[in-house]
Length: 114
Image 1: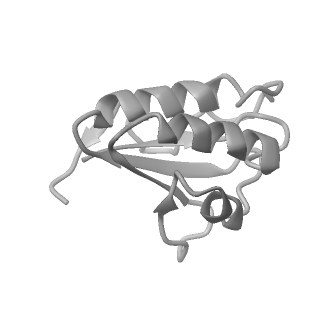
Image 2 (image 1 turned 90 degrees about the vertical axis):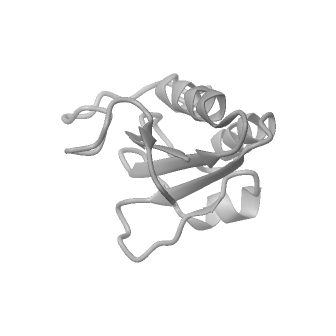
């Protein structure tokens, strides 16, 4: 399993259209892909291939999320999703005062033993 923490940098967060783009990208991969809103500590990770689950997280601009992928193409899946988020999910990118990663987060995928 690989994980990465990133900040949502588009102006409107993961509302309907950007969430649709995100889910479409996640579905391109065979790996199990999950997303979790780190700004809501009690929030569980959800299936990144399910539009309703992604929308239920209420991820807005500037929110920090954790992406995880497990499977044969896990690194490609994470790279594709991180790139899509970094490009603003098809929308203009906002400039935030902090870096586009969670403080203390890794800049590259992290192997876990889960």
